[in-house]
Length: 154
Ligand SMILES: [Cu+2]
Image (cartoon, rainbow, N blue to C red; front, side, top):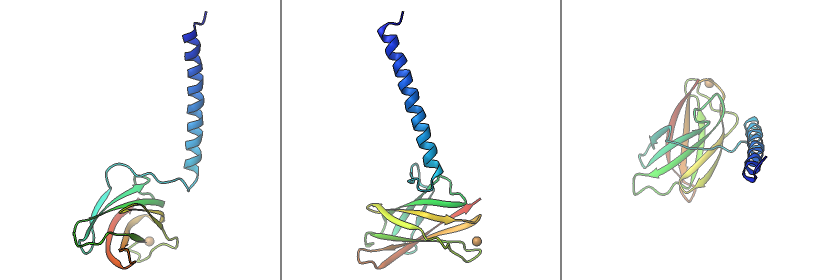
């Protein structure tokens, strides 16, 4: 009684359910590891001016809401002063001002595009106010400016 179209839709349903269960298993595995590549999307959580007003820095986080523990952040740097050299490198110091301490684990910062820097392994290990002190360097490696964004970790 099955016509050809009914058989093919049944096969399609089986193929789809296999694909979906594979996809769910894949997601579960990704969530379980701390090496999950960060994904940044949506509007910036913060946009801050640099200390010398040469740059505006948009900050996105992964997870989307920074949590107690390891986070990743993306910094998109736009020169607002035409005299500002391009920011070619960035350093990041997580700092807890109320206790005057940083982190023993240091972030890893890589440039993922011109003017875009991603910091992984940002260890915000205590609840409270954390400063993310970003420093920018020019092509010669000279320090040119700083920008601090502030996050409260629940
Ligand atoms: Cu602390």
